[in-house]
Image (cartoon, rainbow, N blue to C red; front, side, top):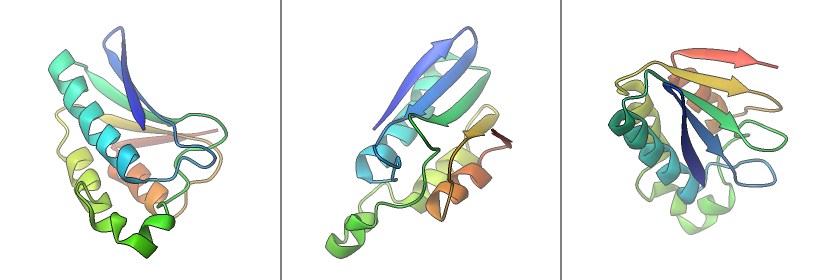
Length: 114
């Protein structure tokens, strides 16, 4: 899942899906909902960060067996939503960002890494 918090005028969208913050359906919905919350709150920027040891490491591979990766919002729709966000977005990357996680990072306007 992803939780939104407004800190001053900057939104923080924290992604939490242990152990590697895989981009399963709940996380994808959380990102889209978090962007909408940031826009509604009037955030001047939105930072996406992974909770725990890593930025989203990639897709939830368990969803490929069930077809869940095709459930809306799909990863492509999440990326499109990030691209169309009304404020600048920043991927605060740490740990691994592979496949879909890297796609999410690249969809943000800026990337910072530790």
